[in-house]
Length: 261
Image (cartoon, rainbow, N blue to C red; front, side):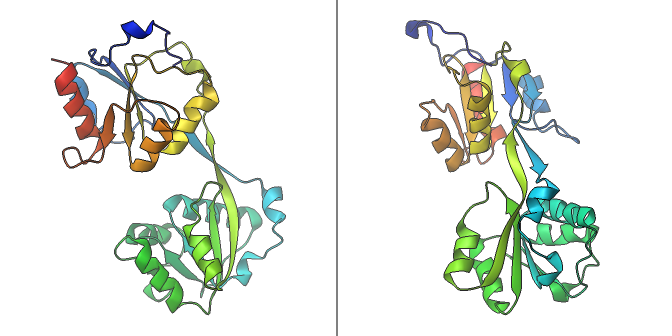
């Protein structure tokens, strides 16, 4: 992973790509990159650069809160749901039947069916998958006492909004996103590495502080990921989404068409 160190004159960003590392777990179902591997003769490996860990129950108890005191819970992701109900199980807590749940999207709301008796009158979601509508849901239920279970790296927009508008809420970190151990990749080199989040970029440097890009091509999804890479002085060769390439896969294919002739 720690790139070789050629002279600057030998750096060639148009070399054929033979190996690609995707910084995500191996797909459990169909691998969307299989056809790229076959079509362009590349080896594509998967490795998760970040992992999620629940907070220690002792650390959670320091909040000194009773989960059943809250009349509404905010869920921004399926992961938050999983960790919240795992925490409830560990604490031997059953949420009251009339607890309301405000969710970031319909997909997140429907995921609740795995953990509670699903009733539309107590599960609310942003029908447009955008923050503007979820704020409207907050306003509609402002009389509630909200719990916002989240990760250590959550965005500040939700708690900031609730605080600025005088909601009765409590923000509780119930799981942490941390860098995976990639030390076994130290002497393995890839022609391209694909990143999806700024945390993936952070993981690279947590594991390999002296990483040099050199001939390694880098692909990124999303402006935040691209910025995180460029802030470290990295060259982002493949960017998505764009008008020409709405997905990382399509962006990589466009690049392979140029260099793997």
